[in-house]
Length: 344
Picture 1: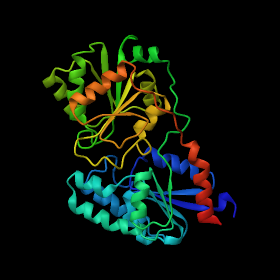
Picture 2: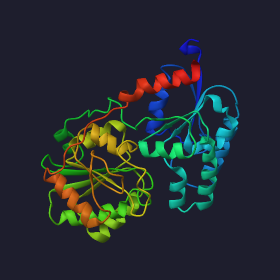
Picture 3: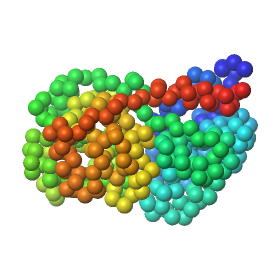
Picture 4: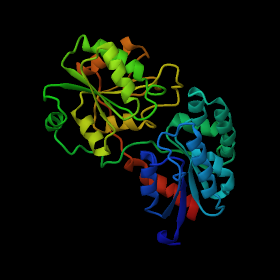
């Protein structure tokens, strides 16, 4: 069968597509036509557990009612998996979803999501974002699990020289930049309060440094905390394009990856984290807290004092830069695996 005659369904709840699924879609398009199935009739940008998200899941379930043909499915959307034949179904396990739901307070939904994970039992092929998640999939009964890290593509490059970028964004070339690329649930998952408390400590020692927080979640909250704590050197550009993310990373001196204290941390590392792997692609020193150990970053305790000390180490050149890794390193092996599974 020719590649232009092959068809694969890519099933995910999120809209717009997470970066990982944009890469998967682009890669699989090299061996087959990809039919994207999402719950996009209802907004799901933040995937919060409200009525609109429940309706989005229902929409996705209706769209997924086609029982034939190869499919790759986001493990966040496993409720539609029973409509598929296991013989040509691949699950991409990118996050331990029940744990995240439980942490966010949605315990009933977490129990439901855990029940849907039984789909993995005896499933012939699962893709996982890192080794820890792969081990969980094996414990859940998956027959074969392949690790495909969430690395950026080689196209992640800055488009503006570092000093020029600083000037365009209202900084001065001499400013030293500490960067956190956020997203959604900054307070609940990504340690926003911990980050701001640690930054107040850093300002006492390094008045020429600026903290940059990217992402449009919790901006009003950040501004309130900034006023109450009298944080002086903080810039919040909001949501930016992927090119601009690269420009911010390129001009930074230290990059941060915090998690909220108490959040399950042993499943997460540089292989599943988009932000950490993007930092690493541009070889920037990384300070992480609330993640599993890795040689790619300095891992510190989840306290403001420890995170502030880690930031200072980075600013003083005492953190070994990470090794860059890219999506293309694993693309050919992933496509060969999928082609054998689906078409031969």
